Image (cartoon, rainbow, N blue to C red):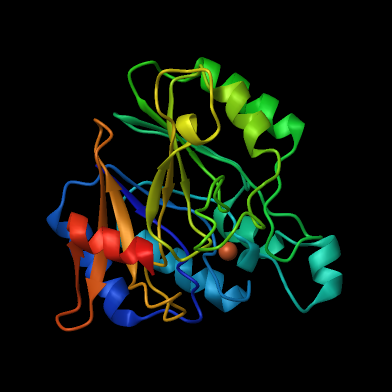
Length: 262
Ligand SMILES: [Fe+2]
């Protein structure tokens, strides 16, 4: 099973959520952890350090990608010339691959110093990903991890932060056996069929899987802290945090429907 966390926003983290995630990892058989960006609130050294210490404390292989909060916002000089210095210092290159027994996880960096929140991917990245997907093991569940979603229901957020090259990318990757994309950014839980939404020429659904913020008190529209699990067969379960007893619980279908209507 894969644990999909997002938007940890260290600097605004809630200790009870961190503790609950550690406990969840101890009590469940988890193969790897993914964090789909926004590891920190303001890309500070101390925030990256705290994030790294937390991820190491889980004692599991993990893959992270940067979010828009992981490059400096106010320090213009650093933002222009050294946007990823702290990120790379703690976590290495911004695009990495993690292969486990059942999963093939590919990190894609959608963060650009000239944008505040909008995601962007280049044609070169799309082609590179294409080559990686071609070589990926056939029997592993293949997932691309990228901070900004490729689709959002307009009533919740609109399309303004989605990479505008999303359709080109999906058309290119449609026949590569990709199971889905893991995102954060909106602090909103959801799952959408990109094959249907973009009219892709493939029978297999490609899923856009959104995780909320797992640990930050910066919650959007009353959505609780949350994370996802994905089984090796592709079953996705959304969990959310109960403040009453400081635990994450799986969402029932009725609860999921209510959250989507917020
Ligand atoms: Fe973000």
